[in-house]
Image (cartoon, rainbow, N blue to C red; front, side):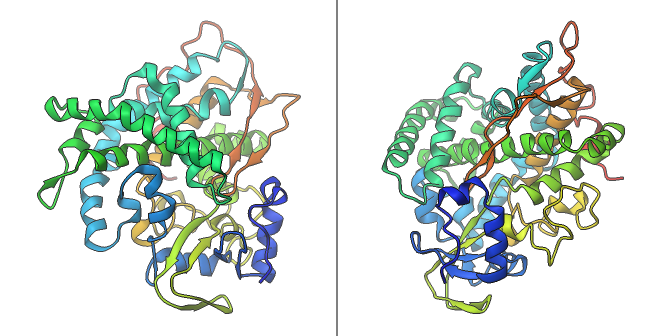
Length: 424
């Protein structure tokens, strides 16, 4: 039962050899420091993510204290279905096309306009980490000048959510961020209840479940969830996709020639370099699997990054290959896809289509602005993270364009059309 220590510095530096060891020798083991029952094989992880007898009860201690109240990610049954019906349309369908995609285009253009004449940029620090937060702040109708505060708050909230080592300073910083965010948003919520607008925050204030409007506390929790959940993961997907393309010139050339391949590059990045490394589940009853028994009441760590590199499911799993036969963007942003990055079953990620739009638009606009993008000579890209994982920085250089303005939104709001929504 002495499998890899998921909290060790060696694990953080490079978890992938440890994932191989898990799958080969420890498909089920108990991590001593956290008490998690760890699953790593594709078959076992997908089973645990699909549902019964595994539930999201673990989020009561991992997520609810961070956001301040229950949200859809920890609900099941009729409660989950009701909140999904109330909350889901804002992140998919017509609302996504009419309101969200133009906001992503604008946010990407604003960020690119700041560096496209410079000829160099850190794609993490100056672009990827800002885009999702700027988009969500715009959708919630929050002031542009407060975006640095949102960035600081979501960073602290995500750190607290993944604080499996129970670092007291991380806990304090997360609690402080939670209190500051509540104090900031509460008067705005009261204003939107009195004078609603067309923004997402107004929609949350007006939303009803079983005939009752959500309380201020519930609206605050959903705002916190939106600011935190999509920020770090989308940033890692954007920077990871660009990193994989620039270090594979042949595949980058193919994407430049056919922007319909951008989605494939994104999906393959989500498989090979998953922004979410593990997802927790709760065993509601004793479960026999992976050669052992998970006792009722256990917290189960589903290591989706290990499952996505399982050689029993994906050929040559450590290679980045956007042409691999196992992936299909037409279904990989749904619960029927091959990758498990977005989860499975009822709790398949509500923001999958938003992530597809953000990364698709971002990569298309970056390729437009940087036709000869390449790693800076002194670049030493490093990844970090146990719960979420991504590049710390990604310095690139390119030939600057004169006059600027090339990052401004294209007339096609979907950004290169088939690169994001159509399949070829």
